[in-house]
Length: 68
Image 1: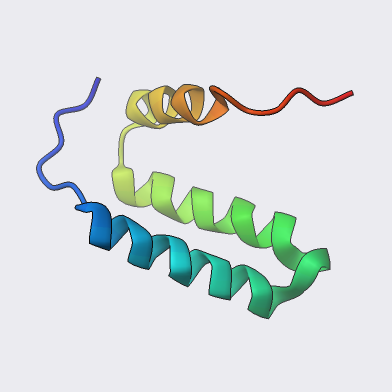
Image 2: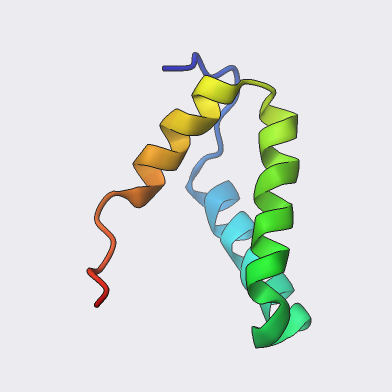
């Protein structure tokens, strides 16, 4: 997995969470899925490594509620 040069502390993570929640509220329920896809693609481009992105994608899938 990737070596991280910088990481957010708890306060930074809370700030990012709050900013994301505000942006989701602003774009509205209908536009939220497209907004999140655009955001993830921008973040993947910033990350700049396909395998690191895939590793993070796998981590994000863990511990989600079952659907269906």
